[in-house]
Image (cartoon, rainbow, N blue to C red; front, side):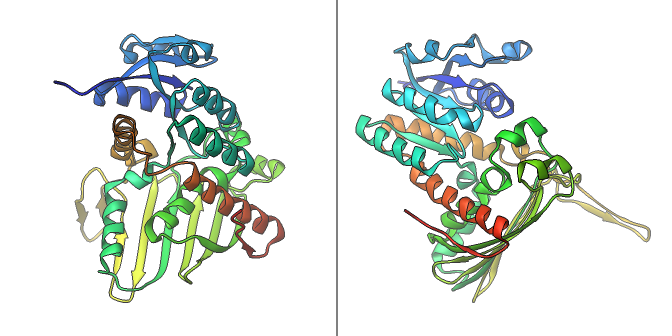
Length: 336
């Protein structure tokens, strides 16, 4: 007897929505993509969707009682209302980070999903990356001894369109939110204090919306471990993602994934394989793994391992970082 299938509704057919749609249709047979909603869908993408119904009205998903779960990939300002309506219709939800820029909205969603006995999983996909999981395993085993410091490099290959940047909540709530969550995931500790020094070097329009495109972030965890994050919206040379964990017995480095591992050197030059140029390439397996986890959680009636409480903590760190950047002073993180 085969696995029970779950019919899926997908809201938002942008870059992330298309990736999830292709993954479901090509690699996740336990999920059936039945309905897609987007205000301006890419019709040319339709042949990839194996007959899924495409419309611009979310009611088509909400009233369909055969749809058991909804994947939300629309712009962040729309997440709160969409999630609330899905939960009230008894549909489990997978939503891309950061859910909301409002702590109060996230707290309300926690109350509603608990009351309705519905699961909400957040798209913090790096928790499902096998390299990061191995690093966590080494830390938890004591192989590194006492952790002293953590450094994260998070450089995007190319800056997103300005239209997206205006609604993204800013660099701290969009790009760096993964890093704040990763510190918590790896160490089991909360951030005590954060200091952000950011600047605009790539798109001068970011100054008009109070955002930056490069930042150096220093953090102290509640147990005293010192952390730093080097973040940039654009590198040109590829999607640069590294984590270094330093302990009393050794260190772990999670390096960039490359097409291959060779390098060629002679008297004139050294040639090496390029790193991946997009986050979709770099984290392809983790995106699949997180949806498989979402499916398993529903089937086993077990809460997902990453939910609203996790993103709430990361949002609280981002808000303290925003205050730090404005005041040019370190800020303590308020967890309420």
